[in-house]
Length: 252
Image (cartoon, rainbow, N blue to C red; front, side):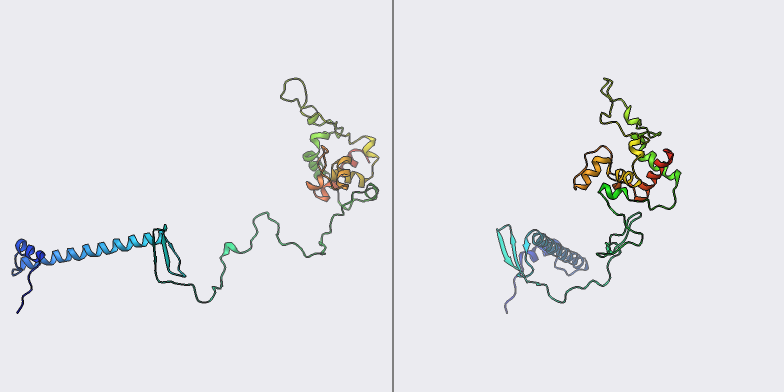
């Protein structure tokens, strides 16, 4: 009968820990075997982790299984092509649903040709047509009109409407006695030049920035006038309230 010769490892174990006949030898051998198992398991886990990192760092094509590492290493793995039905979204997340923030107007535009129930402002550029415009407001609020004038007009035309607002006397920072405003003097709103106009004309000049602004708007051009186009800043009602306010202070 042939007998299997002990390996170098077995010989070393016998020399160090005996032949295993005693209980102490057996316990030592079991601990060593367990240690070897743990080492092998750790090596395997490290290898798997390294391979996973390499796989992530490389370029893996799930449809073909091809893997490329910087052009130096190329091999193939099992392919996992996408298959199955198309995903259907049943419940959408709330932050994707339409919502309005505070003070935000609705975003949906009305259908073409629809008419707002509150009416729509008629935009007029022709002076002859402006002359025939009549104020649509039925109630005049003097206090409200005064506030609108104070915020938007008083800086140029002044509190007394004589065209002597603070902007006309504000000194510049140059220290040479010049003023910040060096343009044409604001119009005296109590002068005959203004009081002789119809309500519609005054409304048109307020809306489009005086005579130069109205002429530019009629041509579809941007206005170079100093006076703002208040059609973009004030509502139609607020502009008509200003017309009534000018008439009130002018005694008309």
